[in-house]
Amino acid sequence: MKKNIIILLIIQLFIGCSSDDTSSKSTISIDLVPSATNVVIDQAFSVTINANESMKYLWVSTDNFATGDYAIQNFGTSFNLNFNFDTLGQKTISVRAKNQNNEVSEKQIVITVTRGNALKILGVQVVSFYGINTVYDPEFTTSNPESLADLKFGFAKASLDSYLSNVYSWRNWYQSTVIPNQGTMTWDCSNANLYIDPSKNLRFGLADIDNGVAGSDLLNGPPDYREINFSNFVTTKPASITYTFPEINLEFKVFVEWAN
Ligand SMILES: [Ca+2]
Ligand SMILES: [Ca+2]
Image (cartoon, rainbow, N blue to C red; front, side):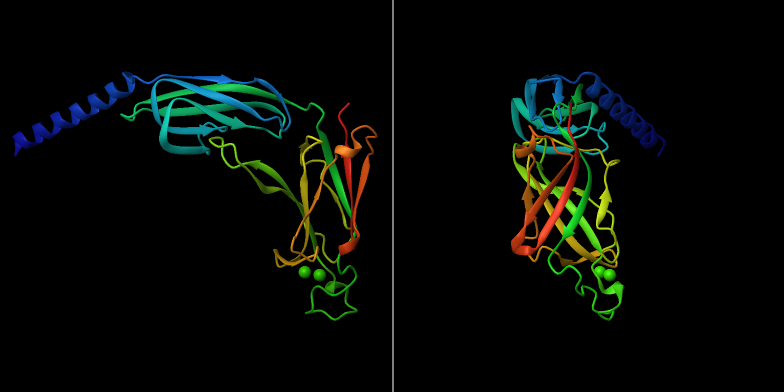
């Protein structure tokens, strides 16, 4: 019995040493080569990972591996990551790579994002929508203001599916607070840091909210959105832009701050 315990201890000691040795003697080593280290809002750029041996696992994170994108596949000795940022400041990109033996190499680079010619969305005002001033909450009588729609708008923006891919999909970018019973139909978004390259498209949606979830689409979809952009206004730089879609009685204004 005593002998068994001693053997077990020796085995544990051996395993302990062996795993320490593995990490300290990792043979894989990666380097990160960014296509740019100073970028502007929404600017696409790439980071090439170069490795001294074939990579079979990658984990890419911009929050020190709290979250991120990872995949297990044969990446070879060089692989391109794709990025764009729509918030300002310094971004730390962390990459963890593993070789065939699960040995690890990790590197970080810092990218600085400045505003460039991005505009900032300050607010939205809905002027009219499909079924304005009609009953969207039929549990209330027609004359009761509670029967009017409880408004919430959203913006969607095309964004990368993953740092490991170059595919863009429409994703929620911003969702407003709910304004009950039509109210002012006006939202202040100036604290939301909504910066966007004026050449990019946005999708706008508007819904009646019932108990926290979307009840009715106020664009009478499909489609439940309309696409807008700011490219026609880059020379005139108006502080407010009105978008009108008469076929669904939709009109709304976007209040913006232009870059200098
Ligand atoms: Ca209501
Ligand atoms: Ca409602």
